Image (cartoon, rainbow, N blue to C red; front, side, top):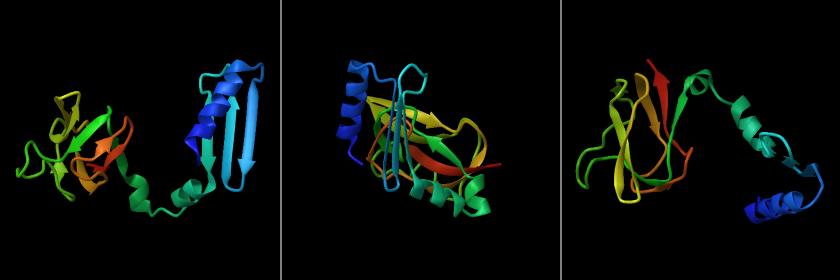
Length: 139
């Protein structure tokens, strides 16, 4: 999928009197609508099929997402042990990781007690707002 194409489509819609646009090419479906709170929607069949193929345990997992853009760090400093490991139980308020944004180290804390099932991001990887950092199971 070409994000530049989608941006062009959005710009063209904003400049014109068109209020709705739909496009389908194989499994790709794009629907744009002006005047609604949600202005665009992109949907792909493979993502839906992956959801259907999940096990019961996978459906119970909660995504812990990045609240900001920055660089993800698993530990407080190079050479220090990670804040959390896969399989570890954490309490509400425990530090899970750090996200560095504009030279500021932001500690990301658990919002609920859980078991960290999977670390989804590599250390020192750049993350965007909404990037899934961890998969966890509530306890």
